[in-house]
Amino acid sequence: MNTPSHSILNLAILDRGYLQGCTWPILFGSWLPDAAIFVFYGWAKVMGLPEQVIWNEAYYTPVWQSIFAIGNSIPLALCGVGLFLWAKSPSGIALSASALLHHLEDLPLHHEDAHQHFWPLSNYRFVSPVSYWDPDHHGAYGALAELSLVMVASFVLWRRVRSRWGRGILLLVNTVYVGGYWQFYT
Image (tube, rainbow, N blue to C red; front, side, top):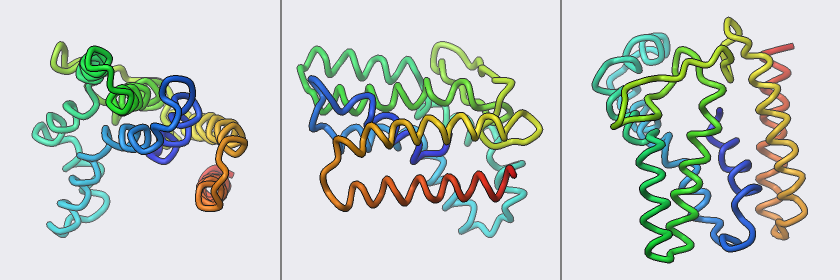
């Protein structure tokens, strides 16, 4: 999934009940698993690597895959949830639960770029038959499913969000997603 999708879905799911008002930890937790990928991309651009080399070669090197495994570990996220439940920290629970949701949302939509979600217990990668972007692996359907979920979650959030900034961001993300889907898959 695209990182902003995780933010919208996780806010719709988690920002209520005991975790209501933990907006920033939920947002941070939704981006945290992809943080190493952003660092990787910045490093690759500084190194002058072309996009083709970045995403078809450098991304798959063992060093980077090991780094990505840490941020995409379901066991580590579960440990975080447990630790913060014990500490009775709503912000910590929100952050860890949001990272965990990110991992669970990624599982059905990553094919060749599947993460080692069970690290450090296993290097196993669940290779989904569906990709969120790759047309060779039903990317149009994966992207449509993502877009649909984001739109439903955005509707839920629209009713909760009162600020113009929040509503503006929801409109912007949905507009970009609809335009992107239209451009790439129709």
